[in-house]
Image 1: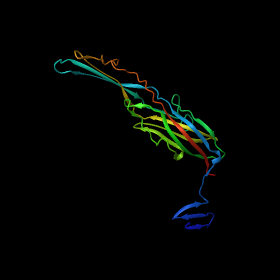
Image 2: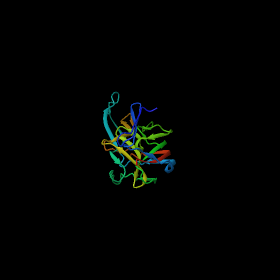
Image 3: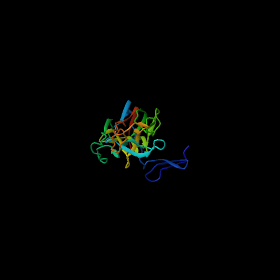
Image 4: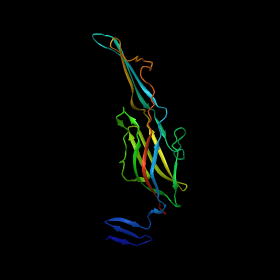
Length: 238
């Protein structure tokens, strides 16, 4: 049972549990189930980052008795430099080569203001980092249905790094949009190579200061793909 009805003035108000549950002067929304868009086994891809580089370390040391020789060592690490990716359209205005193109998933009925989105996704392509044992963290529960607040989802997030997607209604079309970001600081991701050279003990180098002793090519692919089912229901506040 409701607490009260109030039809004074130009409004009709329903109150239950001390909370206003309905008012004719407040906006409501209407879902349009007949216009639902179902995407099955749908893949959302985040591409590899650009300008991959490396961080190089070099040092010398005394091997101690009995050789007392000067050794040298090097190590190199994969690095992703700071970069931001997203849609080229206003108000985002990302420019080439950091554009993530809009993906048109279908028409929105006239009057659609936003969309109610549910997803059931699993990461099917995973970038490796920090050696080969620690993977990029996922920011949501995989393999079960989730309701998306504002039609958006952060899929991966780590210190200085994030990827997300969202659905947006633009000019009568429903668009899938994506962003990926490496923050203001570069991210060191994994060990590329390590060598040590101690004359008279081993010859694994040369681990020279010029950067040629250890591998200096970061060819790792940081692409991520999320695959699953998506339900999109257009909604209107009119």
